[in-house]
Length: 426
Image 1 (cartoon, helix red, strand yellow):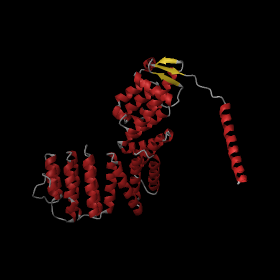
Image 2 (tube, one colour):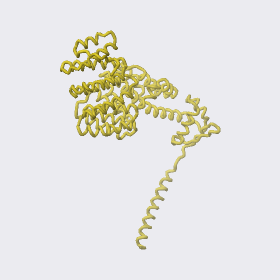
Image 3 (cartoon, helix red, strand yellow):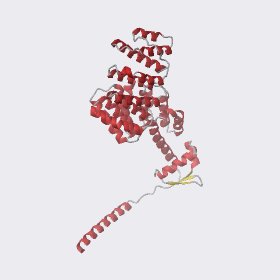
Image 4 (cartoon, one colour):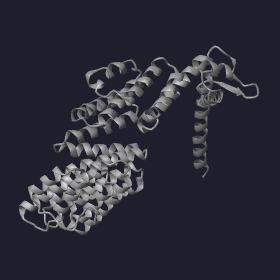
């Protein structure tokens, strides 16, 4: 029992609720509300008042960042859950779990809280609530990168929910499974799960926020396949949905929209999107980061590109989706610049190339050796002299492949004649 709870209870009436609101500070309000919840009365009015008291208490504890007390509150309320309808129990439980999620640094507490509630709902045979708490638990495990446990949980949950044909929950779970497979780099399964989510969503009314999440995931998967134009249209749909709801995910959709423009060589459009009415609402470090990348790409400058990556590390490097695409963009830009610089030479010092491209010598040397191995150009590195030697592209005579093909065909004829003669001799 929490220290805030006093032994004497207060009657569950509107007067008691008013008293809690008029209290001089949050601690006193919390204390009063705990006492209201302890009222043993189970009349319809008292139960209604207690529900309001629980909602108010949850809000106060969230504002005070008292996550552990919210967890204890769920345990204390179990006798109360036995006397109210199951739907109201589900609403209160999910409300308290959502409240804990609003308190920063509580991911491990949320996971243990969800596991506790899954055990309780299983023992109480509350299937509807258990499935939703398990879906929430899977999402938390995914955020914590505990992929194996999340996949095991989702696999059993999907079978169960499909059997019950709960379409709304099925959309959530299929989306979660798609994100999980994407994190595990299993693109075919991620696409299959997203298709299943879309199929389930087409059969019912889907809330705008959920539709936005489906569009966002679709955009991410299309971008992964380098289909940036289609990805852009999905990100735009997601951005409009989240922007209308003032959802924080809107900024990610906008960021990925700008990324797609850069990836399809339309970096000049980025400034126009940012200065539009919708874009101006979201000005901040995320948008500034993409603008810096777009400027660097327009100028074909690796120095500006590296400066952008350094100045906006959390917005670019720590976002796995942006980081993955910018890595390939950086490599392409670096290769283009190096090929342009070495074109006039047959022999050139690596230090000279590094000076022209304004990058460290070891970085340039490593990239040149990689390009030689990938057959981007013919050459070799003379590390003793610190030089790059570029060879003329060897011209392959057209007669050679034709000769090889003829020899191969003659070989096949000889083999078939040998088989026939062997049959005659037998």
